[in-house]
Length: 198
View: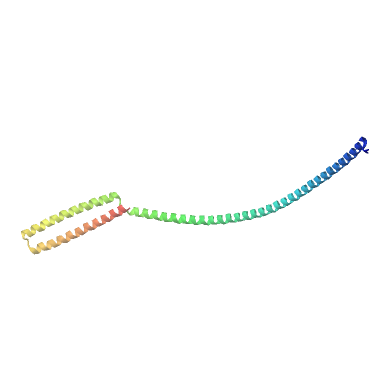
């Protein structure tokens, strides 16, 4: 059997097949390169589109936040203005109340000063007390003397009418002196009470 294949035909066949494979590979590489380039271009375009969408979204959010911040600042300014106005009103009321309180304190001080001016000084009280004690002692001595005289007259039998008249007169004098002494004691006690309360 004779074969039509020779080394040269085999080489030529292989060379053609290699050339065909090379051309096929080149075509595949070119197709792959074109597909890759197209894919990169598509991805680049998609990235640009996504970036544009993101930029648009961010611009919208920025505009929304700017509006919200402006509204918040306006509300804050209004709240501060209202708070300042209320603070001014409250300050005015507090100042007025403080003035009234100071006026009442000054009136109280004046009343205390007036009251203190009417108090009896300690030295005058001591002198009045000593004088009152002396008068009470003197009145007691007079009463004892009168009682002694009355008793001695009655004992001597000097006459009922004269003794009774003298006794009435002396009793009136004694009663008047006793009332005077009691009045002075009451006045002194009132002064002492007023001094102790002050």
